[in-house]
Every structure is written in C-alpha cells, then in structure tokens.
Length: 228
Image 1 (cartoon, rainbow, N blue to C red):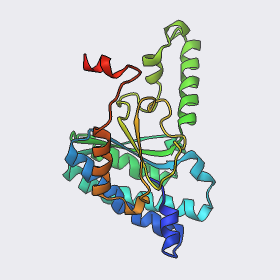
Image 2: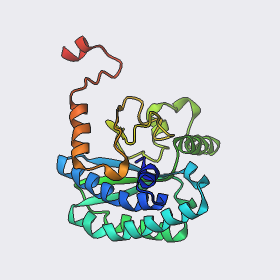
Image 3: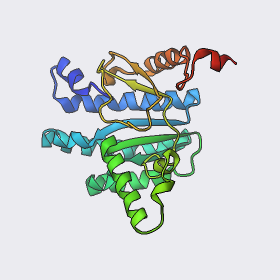
C-alpha cells in the first residue's frame, strides 16, 4: 500500500495526512475483496524497515494503527471477516499488541474472508526466523535435516496456514517487491498501478482482478500442457 506520503505532499500536507486518508482505501479494498469472494487478503501495513522513518511519523502510524483496528472490529464482524497478523509482532508497542490481540480474538469465528495485516514484517526476517526455528528443532531431535523440503520449510513461515498469493497489487507505480512475501510469491501474478494508495478504490481493485483473469498461469509449464 504505497504512495501515502507522496499523496500528502501533493496536497501540501504532512505525511501522516496521507496515512489517515489511506484508511478509506483499506476499508474499500477489504469490502471489495469480500464481495468478490476472495478468501485471503494480505495488507503490507508496516515493514521492519519502516522503523527507521522519523520518530514522529512512526509514533503517528502506531497511534493510527491502534485507533483503526479498534474502530473496524464491528465492521469486520458484520461482514464475517477474520483478522490475522504476521511479522515481528512483539516489536510493536504494547498498546498496538493489545488492540491487535483483542481484534483477532473478537473476529476469530468469522469465515467469509481472512484479512492478514503484515506488521513489522519483512520477508528476510521471516526466512531467517524460520531457519533458526528449523535449526533449533534439529538440535532437539524433533526434525532431521534430511527431511527438509519445501512443504516442511513452509510450516515454519508466518503464513504456514495460508495459501500462497495469486495476485500481488503494487500501488504508486513502484517497480519493486520491497521485501514482501518473497518465498510465497514465487509464482504470484504482479499488477502495478500508478494510483497512489489513498486514491485506491473498488474500481481499481476490479481493474486489477480483471487484468489478472486474462493471464495464463503456467507454473513452469507450456500452454500446450495446460490445454491438454
């Protein structure tokens, strides 16, 4: 969800102004995905690298995160949307952890869609964390090194109980992955839009999915194999 700062700069306002206005984009995207039958939606809300931003912006983002999560629980339950989170959640302020835990528990029985917030997340952190956990289990005799394969490795990732993404939408025209779900997006289709995140609405979501529907997903095979 990129472009909040540039959007605010275009308006002659502080960066946090863009973050505040991005809440509507989140709401429309979540509702739009639920309406279309999407089962999992992951929003990259805050990366581990974002901690290096000016402290005032980080503090404002954390405060916004708390107020947004607590304010959206009722709407999530109304639409039967379950909330989950991935990332180094222990690094979040205690107030954020508390609101996040409350929201996850309050929505745990919902079944229509799972909304995953990536918070204090980076894929390199996730992969290193998984490797450490695997090494620990090998030392304890729980796991044999000879047993390690893709399916085993995936069980140690934050997304162990989630499917790999079919579509990655990147806003604001940026042509990079930004350390997001590097293992999981090996065969994910990527859609880049110049729209800044605070301007992203359901019609932009529909355009992205319509574009995705025209693609042929071969997963290393050739078209003739898929046809047969």
